[in-house]
Image (tube, rainbow, N blue to C red):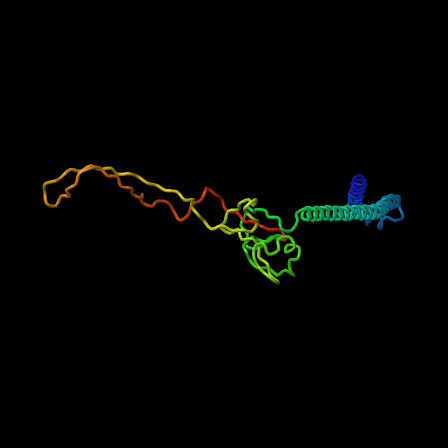
Length: 235
């Protein structure tokens, strides 16, 4: 295709050079010497130039057809590319749906970025109340485990809380307040005294031990090192 266009363009340039050359002057002279040999020669040149113009017109037509064909090829390829993009997008969408279908309602994941609203297909675990009719699959998975009754049920609330594994003696959905395990800190002071002679000195003899509590230290809560993330439940 590109070779055909290049060939037509070259012939077009050669023909135009021939037509716009000295032949225009020769044509005027041919009118003056139409009856002589000079006029005959000039007419022959003019005929050659007319043939060149015809060839140019044919080449222009060929070039136009070639450009049109090339345009059709481009359009066809563009259409094929558009179809390919649609197919790929359809496969991506299908894969996303398949992955989403693998995660059942009620499963919880963590999200490490900031969230201003619930992501598509997920709900932030913030303890809010939901309508059972609006979220039947999720209600079927967790019921009233996290609160609610009748037509509403609650999401788990993990805001500011750690998650602890459920098991024997610890049912899913139970909550514990913060607590410090019972323990004691004591220190002992020993002192020995003898009778004093001054009126303001306690008169006693012997040895005694007294227990004292230490002063308070620390912050507002007992906690391990931690990082904060959003917990999301599949709706």
